[in-house]
Length: 336
Image 1 (cartoon, rainbow, N blue to C red):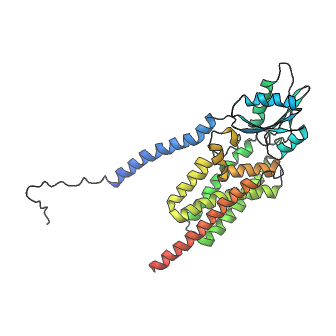
Image 2: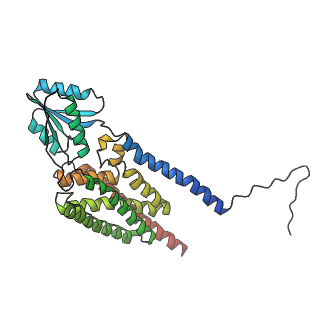
Image 3: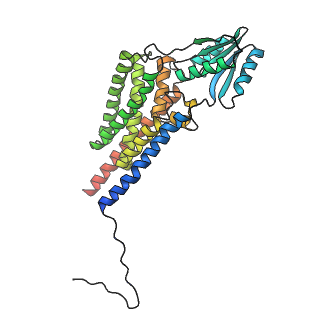
């Protein structure tokens, strides 16, 4: 039997006992759940509540005097539009088809003529039509032409924008399953690539063949959908391979909670508050949505940037998966 001893003249103070494990778990839930809700509301509600044009690329074409007047009207809304000047309507059309601008206002003797591209963003096309109609002289008709129209099967772009979240969830799920099943190194990388390829084929069959929401080359679209999935799944599995199961949470938060609402696929990156739109284009959902629009509707115009972004995520994630497999193998060998 042991007894506590004290030095004469001193007072013995026992350290407070830590709360039991059950209490710590309750406290963790009470702190974590409201924090995640606040983060989710910030990520999803903030961009939605602050949607407005910010340096939205738009073209102005026509005779210098008339075009200058249109440009001055657009510049009155400070920071809303990034105006590009073109000599004539043909040059403005080319800029739209190359995804340099979202639309163009052509100044003519009979009033403004508006060129839009609902395939790039139905929301922006409608916004431009409202802005030009409001600025046109009273009684002057505004001719509107949709240069690159959204497909009849998805005129509002709802199916395309709705496909971003399933691709992100598929990627997170694949990365989590590979991790939880204990696959490592080359086996994990092969599983991730194979799963992404199958997801791309299934997604193309649904969005292109069934819904008619995509109109480009079928296999190219399947490849983009597969690459989008692989970028997410490899990132999740790679973080988990290095950080353990905490990497699963970090990867899921990055891809789904930040990447999805910041993607701008439902509207346009330039309509989101800064820097949400820019951040979204550096994450798999935003880059994947932009690349899918390019290959499906614009003959792969402006596709190199988002393609490189997705390839970087996929390559870095797979490299971490392989590295994690090597490190785990050395640790197992050391224990033996």
